[in-house]
Amino acid sequence: MTTHTLHRRLVIGGAALTATALALTGCGRSANSDESAPKATTSVGSEPATGNLTVWAMGTEGENLPKLTKEFEQANPGVKVTVTPIPWDAAHNKFTTAITAQSVPDAAMVGTTWMGEFADLGALDPTPSGIDTAGFFPGALDTTKVGGTSYGVPWYVETRVVFYRKDLAAKAGITTPPTDWDGLKAMAKAMQEKAGAKYGINLLPGGTGSWQTVMPFAWSAGAKITSDDDKQFTFDTPEVQEGLKYYQSFFTEKLAGTDLPPNQTEAQFVSGQVPMFISGPWMAGSIAKLGGDKIKPNIGVFQLPKNKSATSFVGGSNFVVFKNSKNKDSAWKLVKWLSDAKTQASWFKLSTDLPAVKAAWDDPSIANDPLLPVFGKQLDDAKAPPAIVNWEQVATAFDTEVEKMAKSGQSPADTAKAIQTKASSIGTGS
Image 1 (cartoon, helix red, strand yellow):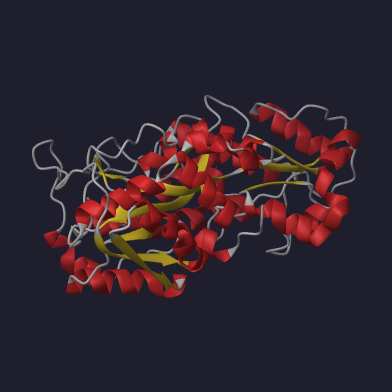
Image 2 (tube, one colour):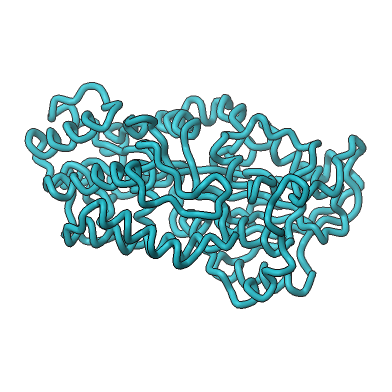
């Protein structure tokens, strides 16, 4: 497992609705009834892939993908795959410009929060029936769906679990990780009272991306972000309030701090100042890099504790085929090959990207890791926001209100109401 930093967060956080996108909205998908929903425009034949394929991928994935696609070319001698690596900070504009100019590649890696926007622009090809999606983690598969239509496949995934210091937990008398909300609260108290921690757990007191930690508690209380048709937000509900109330309680009971310096989670964990936090798999590498061999055996992880459910956040990246691809059949064959469990395991070894296909987690490189199987179990109960055009604006409003709740004592009820009001003003884009 290695360190995954900025690009990981950009996968689920990079899209802002551009003027270009707004201008093109009218040529995208229409209101979705079964009759008007986009349909697959091709099938995936059994013969080998042929011709030239152009593929875009971001960050280190763009650098590593050519090593993998050489195997696809060997299995399909008549095809040539050209991968163009794209810097993350330029990717969104490059995609929207290419969509406008109808100069898109045949296939591409796409951030999960871009799916709604690109589908709304009419740029993506619906997933054909020849792509078997049964083996993907359900939450990851949901990130490909826009208005009930699936576009592409999940390529790799990440989710959030609770990290904890095993040695300090033992000192606090915790021998078994908690499985419910009361247990997590009790563990945080014990870490503080018996193990000498300043705070029991490190939670974001609002600010960018805090929704990714808060919403799992709301989801676990039974909340939903939107109505079933994705046309209305549903933040002002008892279930969202319950999640917010639980989250706020860590701050009001001084089990989590609002005065911790930002971006010091690993250092606070290694020092024992704050021996628990909620985050993704890349943090194990970051902690080990900072704390060395001494800290490695003391890194523990467990799944989010249960209320009605124990639902976490799922992020990652998808792989799509563009509607204007000139070699659509071969592009889908590449996507199908990338979705094979053996290919997914090979990709993990090349990139450390966690597989979106469940069967790939049986590979010894993952199954024998001391921490990764916990992430695999968590992925069975993980969600992402619905693929709506305006999600990034809504997320910013959510983070702002959570900060008021954590730092200024705004009530959970007022917080839920304020998020609902702001989100409704922004709209779902549907």
